[in-house]
Length: 524
Image (cartoon, rainbow, N blue to C red; front, side, top):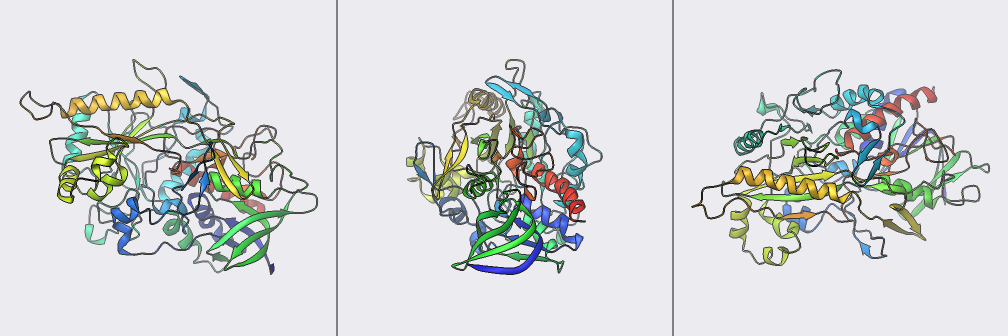
């Protein structure tokens, strides 16, 4: 084992939305900061925009194996790069609703209240939207929480077919609005715009670095400061405590086939909800026999990932639009007249490209999709609009990350599924009304194949190290410091006590900015 002889003020483990943003926030302090990332920089290559490479071959996902609740192996859709999963996210950056921070009754359970409220996060949401260059318009979202100011950039415009669909949705009595997006787009002067509004954005790496991800918005600016060091291909194996167990003394890291020990006054874990919990569990010792900071037995528990369905609207009307991910619908977020419980949110997906269809087809259609020739796939794709439906899953202590030896087990059983099925049913009826044709049409309305995402989809992971004021029921305090270890923090989606119905990324970013203020004061 190689012992590094430097003493750092802070070590940040992970470079995603939490770790990358925190590095940006703390770089100007002048403190000696080491950032550890298990991956390397995602290569800029033509395959970035290849649907076959990205979707069919999963070129940018890890090849490691995890195990589900039945002990069956699966390949998780995790992206280990500088910037983490934000390198391939869809860049939808949405605030939690004000009510999401309170206790919410669902048809099949309760979403617990947060110890902090929306007003505690609002200033940091505003900072996060500025840092990640979010496009939107205040007042468009019918259930928008109070804001201290408008978005930093105007909403991303609808292209012609998407505009038609938005108008048709409005005629159904609904209130679609422009999806808040973190992209570097200038529609006033496209000649100086980094974003080119391509058809390969949602789920793809961005070849031109136009997506506001944690590498371009967090890590790269942080590395402009001489006090910040990034080590890539540095996999953290475990954390070592002092004899008392009250503080972290060293971080054990595997790099280039060697094992290193790094020392720091403060350590921040930001590996994502699953890997952060796994790291704490792997770091058990005599003082922490059930895993580090796990006196409450809550580390790894209450894992959530949303109930999500990708639905394709195949219409007789063609959709030639290039950048389609611009609509969001929140009319069913808290339910409707027939279903007085939260259902969730509807968004556009990115374009449904021909080479995506065999890889993403619903199980019953997959064998047939693979037999369709390329010209047939092109024909189908030219008449599609993709939709993403997401509903809140509820915290359950039995939905958990567990380590069995060196094997990571993700034991997850979906819950609150009736609400999600209701959302699917409701949205399909909306689309049928939009696509309704005359009696002489070849089909009476559109076709709506769908695919519910499985255990391998990790896009919206959260929970596992919930924050709170009671150390017997939570892992972290309100500053995201572990109750049991004085100099150990977790700054990613692990801290969520509940999931809400919106994408978690903006809240992760806002929380990293909030905790960053606390850490800057502590390091003084």
